[in-house]
Amino acid sequence: MNNGHEISDSARAMHAEPAPVTVIGLGLMGQALAGAFLRAGHPTTVWNRTASKADRLVAEGARLAPTAGDALRAGPLAVVCLTDYAAVRELLGANEDALAGTTLVNLTSGDSAQAREAARWAKKLGARYLDGAIMAIPSAIGTADAVVLHSGPAPDFAAHEPTLAALGTVTHLGTDHGLAALYDVAGLAMMWSVLNAWLQGTALLRTAGVDAAAYAPFARQIAAGVAEWLPGYAEQIDGGSFPAEVSALETDARAMAHMVEESEAAGVNAELPRLIQSMAARAIAAGHGAEQYPVLIEEFSRPGVPDTGQ
Ligand code: NAP
Image (cartoon, rainbow, N blue to C red; front, top):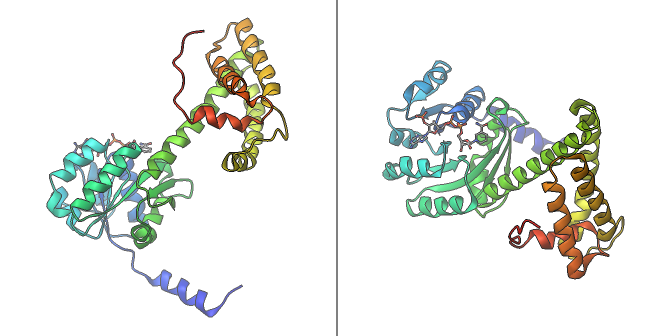
């Protein structure tokens, strides 16, 4: 389907001048961010504490600002990517007078409390503020594989989305400035849990002479299959009701016992299997044995019990 309205919109987009952008912080990630803006045709101003890290970007067409304050004043949008929030506060705090009217997009990694605090601080100084999280390595920046999450006021994201889109797949999660950091950590929990589960199975199978490469395709298939369950399980969690449509937690707990016993008998690390088993045991003791696995959200939603070593 096409119509005159769509044609005129896309024609406008094609002829729009790429907006100017500033990148502050040219470490491995900041250089990748600035490079992506340049490749997308955005007039790009850069600044870094160690100026030599701008050399390649300047050769590619970036303008090196003499000071961080000049970089902030160079245009309406400044993307900041430093080591941590302390560095951001130190640098921007020394250039407070350059912040009024600027939209800051802080892609430095941190936690949700730091993001919300930075947003309050930026607001006091008259800056617009979006917090962000980069779920990618530098070489992926500028491709659709680079997921860059943003949170903060929707109009500020919308105003700069055409520029930020040069970085990859950019997403606005909501107005709460802490959301990007929370999604970032949630993603890490997913990544390390999957990797640890795979390492557990690999350690077990190696005791029988099966190498990691032989198990990897099997493990991948299981991980992909389990991922398919998530939308249905999410409905149970959001609905607060956990009917055992596939398997009851008590049934799962018997398989968990095999996992612990097999790990102990094989002489491999059984800490992860025991943790999985103990969380399920607590849920069963609380009366949830006849319900389905996602009922464990209740265990995950409160502080854990101290490890007694039992
Ligand atoms: P990096 O290569 O170590 O670069 C750190 C940058 O911060 C450099 O530009 C450094 O300046 C600057 N900096 C540190 N303290 C400063 C201060 N007090 N004042 C001014 N500048 C300061 O780190 P990176 O890999 O680019 O990572 C940057 C951020 O992106 C981190 O929060 C990281 O977690 C996040 N991230 C990175 C990746 C990745 O794969 N690299 C992936 C996702 C997210 P100098 O050059 O002068 O030292």
